[in-house]
Length: 120
Length: 393
Ligand SMILES: Cc1cc2nc3c(=O)[nH]c(=O)nc-3n(C[C@H](O)[C@H](O)[C@H](O)COP(=O)(O)OP(=O)(O)OC[C@H]3O[C@@H](n4cnc5c(N)ncnc54)[C@H](O)[C@@H]3O)c2cc1C
Ligand code: FES
Image (cartoon, rainbow over all chains, first blue to last red; front, side, top):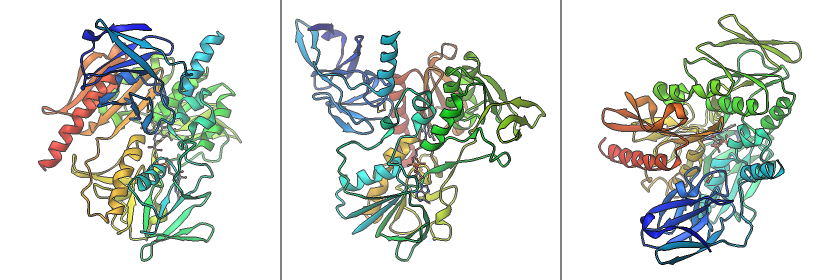
């Protein structure tokens, strides 16, 4: 479990980007739920924590793909692959994330860059 | 409706096919496209794909499990439309008859009047164009980009990162003055020089010179720029010649109402080929942006399936993005209406800011440079205000 941030620091309707490789986006919905998914859109290089949060969905700020925060599923194109959804636990006012064991679906340009950095 | 034919197998055409199926159309669906390729994404052609950071397979717009149940006719060019029975004539002599037609033939790159036929001179619109340009850029040397638009700027940025010597020639006093307006374009024009790209503004191109292969670009002011490769990025024209004489009204593209309906019943148009009536500005506007081709397809299909009876949902203001020199620009709205520009966040010198164009006390356009989150909020605000204004016309 990774401690991410305090619940009190993440108001409803807001998102937080947690620096990790790859980064994680944590959302506090208007209904009061907290969800965590991969922050990088699977379509291209955009940060979903910058996106538009509506209900249990986030719309990517670049080309408006929509992802279900509960499952990571794609609800609207152009993205073709889901983001990973991570398990969230809130304890004593602290948000913890348990990272998914699946391989992330990084967009080709980001995967290319990470591969380049790994080789360097 | 028993048969719907979509002409043009790219973003707008594919989005229309998806919208037809999701709105319950279960009849025959024919998708015609001149290119031999299945629908692919164009924006990476000047960015990641040209840079060699994205494989060709990643350009595909369809998903593996897409179940459109469509009959694809690729490599088929429409050359005419008979309005009486909505028969589409093909260049190979065949015809496709349909009860409903979606025109999604997009746009093609404009070329220079002189200098065609020289090796090393490129336009960039299709995958085949991008493959050819990529090969030439790999030779290194000097690149001259003719045109101060987005595609030219992106190619300049990509080629510079690949190590070429790059010059951009723009006929307007600042590049991107058309899409961004004079106030905003000045805020981003320094990006070229920051990255060692030479920018020559306010001068046109007289012609190109060379033997078999291009050797130089000749400017109207008499200068001669040596070039190993030239990219002509002087805009695009709508692909609507095939509709001439069909009765479908044309005027810088297919003239459409606010829901994509054309002057001929049973024919709608969407994407780069279409000039929709935009209630927010009270005029027809052809929008050449990716997001318009994607979002408006659903409205065009609603218009087609309802026979124009259902009032269209208001569309969002035109929006586009561009990646160049490692920064991301996002723009929405109508810069032509603006009388002043303010910086709401950040600073232009830091290449990270949010600027808003105003007409009197109304925001009419917003430009974000590496400011995705506030940009998104401003874009929504523009949309709300546009709807309110449309209501007051
Ligand atoms: C290099 C490049 C970079 C871009 N970058 C961006 C960007 O960063 N941001 C942005 O917002 N937009 C960008 N765009 C614009 C965006 O790609 C277009 O707005 C989008 O492709 C429009 O989709 P469309 O389906 O309407 O038309 P098109 O993609 O042009 O497709 C039309 C299709 O119809 C076919 N066709 C034409 N005539 C006929 C005929 N008579 N019969 C049969 N088929 C026909 C064509 O072959 C083509 O395949 C870029 C475009 C290019 C070329
Ligand atoms: S980057 Fe998210 S939809 Fe394109």
